[in-house]
Amino acid sequence: MSVVQLKKPLVLFPMTSDQFCALPPSDTVKLELLDGEVVVMTRPTPWHQYFLLQLAIVLGSWVKQRSLGRLFPDTLVKLNGDWTPAPDLVFVARRHLKRVKEKRIEGPVDLAVEILSSDPEVDRETKFKAYARHGVKWYWIVDLKQRVLEEYELTHKTYGEPRLVAFDEPFQPKLFPGLSIDLASLEW
Image 1: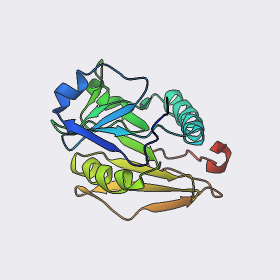
Image 2: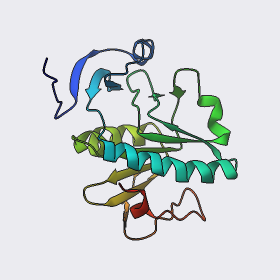
Image 3: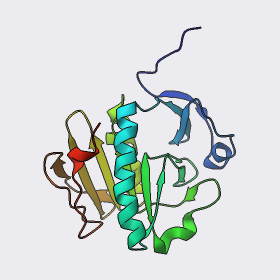
Image 4: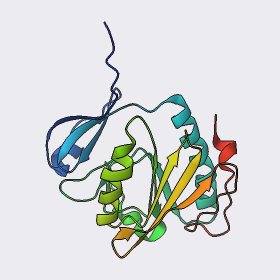
């Protein structure tokens, strides 16, 4: 039996966020609801997952020590009836923890992190616009190939110009004053 490798996300069928969130979880594929369509996403690579884990450890320690809120990897975020993406990592500030429900987060998160994969257009365009439209205050895009992190802040319902941080310089997130992250140390 041959395994099919997706080069781009595959759109399956239309559905509402409530219907989508009622689906049983899958261990074999990553599903997201983007603009009312169920989309099968490519599975992340080991390098993607390693970087994500290392970033989550650094951020998680910072957030926990200061009681700032909670971090969640690969968690459904219901933004409205047509949008339920699953960012690679999200941060929910303590004041918004009531948005965290049993099966998903309902409403915008304070930070969404996406690590670019086989189809960067989804993260750079589709999710970029949706996160801004639905009030996700901070959006980080990590490009492991180019070794750069793009930090976006929501102002007036749109993301301004990104702050680009190369992996060979310290990243000091505006969302977490005082934190400095050595991005190169998070790589495989």
